Length: 144
Image (cartoon, rainbow, N blue to C red; front, side, top):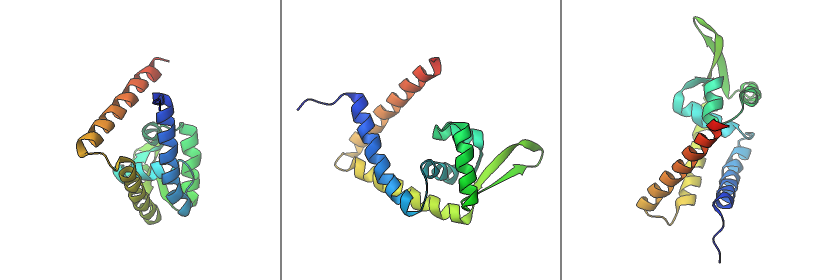
């Protein structure tokens, strides 16, 4: 059987990973975009909307609407820092922290499932090569 082209392998891999992760997200009643924001806030503790958008690769306006729903659902809180009236800082609530931890476990299970059968060296090599692909495409994106 002929090997599929890289773009198709990456698309299929992403779709399979997305299905795996969103099954847990649906159980928590999370919409697309929310799991990766929860993950980012779990890592950083707090952030502003611009940094969230950049890290999660979501348009800032879209992040704004996702954050509004997350705030309405009690997952996050937004507040200004003293002396900085321009930026709202986003933090996880207790409910958001619980959801973020649950999603973190879902991410870890999906990663383990995807990497099953590969040696530690192969896993490291795969991740390194995928990082190279991301970096190469980000460079091209920056030139547009």
